[in-house]
Image (tube, rainbow, N blue to C red; front, side, top):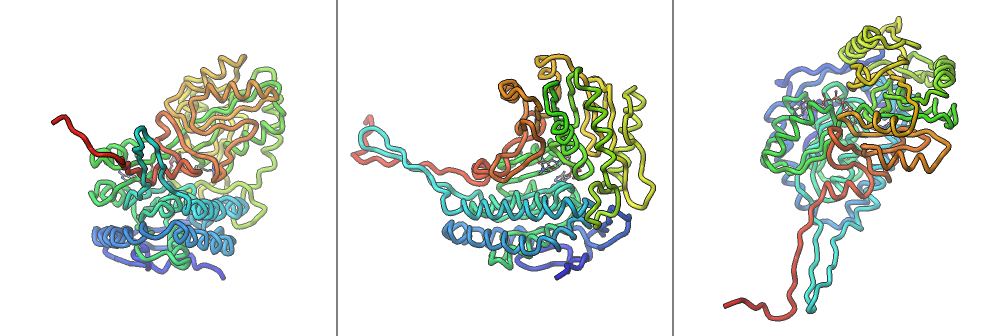
Length: 486
Ligand SMILES: NC(=O)c1ccc[n+]([C@@H]2O[C@H](COP(=O)([O-])OP(=O)(O)OC[C@H]3O[C@@H](n4cnc5c(N)ncnc54)[C@H](O)[C@@H]3O)[C@@H](O)[C@H]2O)c1
Ligand SMILES: C[N+](C)(C)CCCC=O
């Protein structure tokens, strides 16, 4: 089976595809060629209204079902996704431009992991029994929040949809998901598969559009929770709008994460970490370790080995499974990256690799490395969200830690060293939500993922996400007579 690139309609609402051609046209562009591969329409107020009404209507019955029943449907969806991994990966590659070599292992499969994990957890989402003095006791009931809105970024459309939908649905919520306007295709397949797996109509809806479609969803009084994956500026706006309605939020935002490489690190392992943390998905990964602090004793060896390893980058057609480095997602994002590269040169950083557009159709730019970067440079401070690695030097541990933390962001941090005591000491000191020792960017569903400081609020994945998609009702039970002062 091969999926057609053009979906049946723009939106998926109340268990079926839905079109409203009066919405603003939304063209889907294949980043590897620049061609338009689908013509969609942004959601109109009428589409949004249908999504909210159907989600609210379906949620109560869903929450009243047993966790076992809810979990079974999620696990069935995970199985279908795994069976269709190849076709879903081809679609994800068209949506994002990411090489098929990556999408085959990191996108639909990661979504399936989330559905399987929360499907397994659903039956054991319980409250507590709390014994109190004098024979009295209390208990807590874990309840669904109601209607959750998920808003996605464009780098991992399938994964983001599933990382939000799976815990939300496991807890008994309904969800309306608005994918990024840049990558609207993959989430529609997730919705279709959930219904095929037995999810009742209305519980997972996909509506398309840009911020103008997201904003009314965030402020609608019938929405109980908003989970955003996006940039810090958008996070600020969405968090503030949600706060006005006292809604629950999860904010998965951007970063400028540090990776610290000590002299005693295994050189190839550290270089692999730096490549994974800067060039996977053409650098369009929130948690990327884009400030690579390398201790002076190993710096030149690190740069030499990195240059050698970069020659192994195969830049080309993302559908060719030999390709391991694809285009940027859009012409706009390519332009942003080019401007940062020009800025780095202007600031006096040493360009040691890449820096140029690739001479072919589509939005390609070479994997780029700057050395001799200093903390005050713009390229060391701002999230570029493209394949631009900044290498900075340091002398000792205390200096590396202080400089690693000297940022408003706090999504991730990594350390490469043979000294495990030092590794754990560094991790204790990192002001970051997600840390890595002698590795970078691993995100298994069993491990909480998220940031601190400006990088976000709340956690996705693992049991931690359950607390962000459910609430506790506390019940005090008196076993003797209730007394009063008068
Ligand atoms: N922490 C994480 O898990 C994570 C994962 C992936 C990407 N990101 C971050 O996402 C950013 C890149 O993605 P992007 O360019 O799509 O981000 P973005 O902030 O431009 O957009 C994110 C989403 O928010 C929507 N949006 C914009 N304005 C809105 C508004 N006022 N109300 C409601 N919704 C609105 C967009 O349409 C899009 O769907 C980077 O900063 C990256 O670090 C974070
Ligand atoms: C699984 N990764 C590659 C760490 C991506 C997480 C989501 C951030 O962009």
